[in-house]
Image 1 (tube, protein in one colour):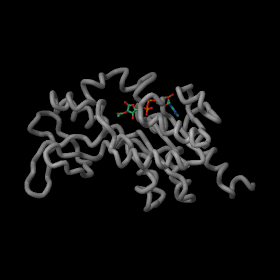
Image 2: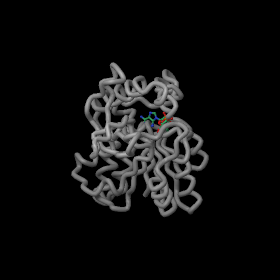
Image 3: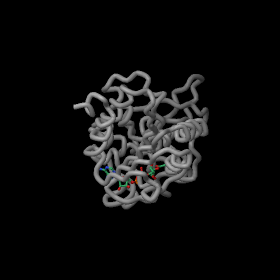
Length: 247
Ligand code: OAD
């Protein structure tokens, strides 16, 4: 089982989605905040925006959908998650469930709000400290060995950038080998993520979509479940657990 998730799975936790009502891209222009050019032009503004998003996410909790998927992974090593989300809520749900091997079963396709990458030495690391985006001099600098001090950027994939080749290769491997792709809370308009479900379908697997609205993947879906992730995913996962289905 490959589970492909998008911003909609975290909507029930209070994390804003990108498109649709109240979506981030309705109020902000991606080219000013989420491109390498924007960061080169105004790193302070970009960090201010990512600092704000970090604070929102840090105040949110994984919801019933994240928890149900984490429990499913704990019970079945064949369940893999590829998320487009940078909020880290899948990882937090897994950590709460005590799943040690989650890193190997969870791919963050678009990176993480809580990781940084150095523009000078390329070092990547976890980074959860508050961001002082009041001035350029307060922005985070690299603390790598050798006294790098290079500028740090959020370790997320921006518009115009490619996904990490290793990550995407692993994701396509999972998609091609999956009996089913469970697609939760994505508008399925961003590639190559949306293509993962098509790969499962082309390889003969099923596509199950959970979303309150139709998406470009709906015509491809074997089953479409209309509704919110926190309400539907736990029931779906429970129906796969013998202890529940035998009752
Ligand atoms: P979008 O904001 O494009 O889509 C969110 C989807 O979630 C929509 O299809 C909604 O109908 C659905 N949705 C809303 N509430 C839901 C709920 N409670 N339960 C289930 N579904 C719900 O977000 P993504 O598809 O994740 O990329 O966007 C893909 C990428 O575009 C993001 O990763 C980001 C963005 O630009 C980067 O930043 C690289």
